[in-house]
Length: 84
Image (cartoon, rainbow, N blue to C red; front, side, top):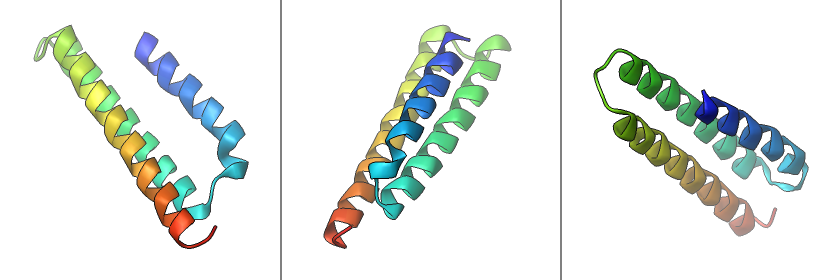
């Protein structure tokens, strides 16, 4: 439950900064956040069902968040390359 709160907090903070971002960064950030939320929900359900451990759930969530960050960074680089 705490992870969902953390993701929601990060997402809310991201909205405050979105006005400064370019269109490709915003799109990549939105896609990354959506993907991370889906992975988090899936990992939480798997842990609740006893299919994986809490540590494995955390690892899945961390990996998804890292991928989301990389997607946002790639979008930012694309915006910068386009002069936005």
